[in-house]
Amino acid sequence: MRTLIFDTDIGVDDAFALAYAARTQRLLGITTVFGNVAVGQATKNARLFCEKIAIRVPVFRGCSRPLALAPSAPAKLHGEDGLGDVFENPYSDQAPGAVQFIIDSVRAQPHEITLVAIGPLTNIASAINQAPDIVSLVKEVVIMGGAFGTGGHSGNVTPFSEFNMWKDPHAADQVLSSALPIVLIPLDVTHKVLIRQEEVQQLNQPVLSAICQPYLAYSLAKEGFAGMALHDTLTLSWLCIPDAFTLAESPLRVITEGIASGQTVRKRSALASREDAFHGLPAQRIALDVDAEAVRTHFFSTLGAG
Image (cartoon, rainbow, N blue to C red; front, side, top):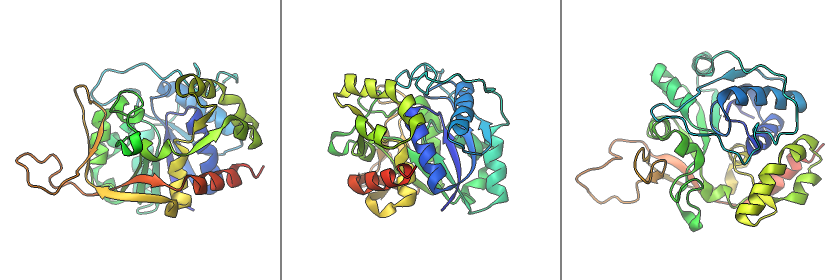
């Protein structure tokens, strides 16, 4: 069991991941960020979801826009409110600052805190900008994001770019090229772990069943699948059953402009080149294959336990 700060732009698959985290890890705090919804809505959603499934953990409000780009519109596949438009949400969108919470927590518990980041990486980039000393104090950063084309699993916003990286490529490039100890869980593996619509109902998690209907409808319309990929939950799967994942190691960058903006790239060759964008960067761990059935089994046994 890890001590986690859970960084999220909470939408439907984020909520599945948060429910999974609450069953398997020690949650220190939830930090919100723009992405699937605006950061104020994410803050309200985190509080609402925690109340609905009895998670008692403080919520902190994070960054409202990318480091350098103009803000882009929120995603709509999670419903207008990000949680399926099924619950009234009376909660405030104000909360203490997420970036300072990350900094203070890591300094207070050196080498003990794992950051799980399942939205744009703006809070993490801002924290290491403001407090570079925390880079060596974080235990691990587990990130859902990116795509490398393994088995044809490339971008889900553009042909190159995954949503979290595309939303703030400058933050993503800064984080992935830093000395933080990172495990990246990209679309290459998350698209392999699917849950059918009827299996959602069988979980006996009525809140999750209620909020996921727009997400399921989007999946059926766009991908022809009556179900959903468990994208964000795989960060927790890595923490629970790391042997289910096959990793590669290489330095990472994120392209920040042009038609490939938001694309994650890794160094693939040791051949000398005149311009090496990876020079001096540490190797990071990247999940490129997964035992999907092992991940599904652990997920169902955890969340299907009542």
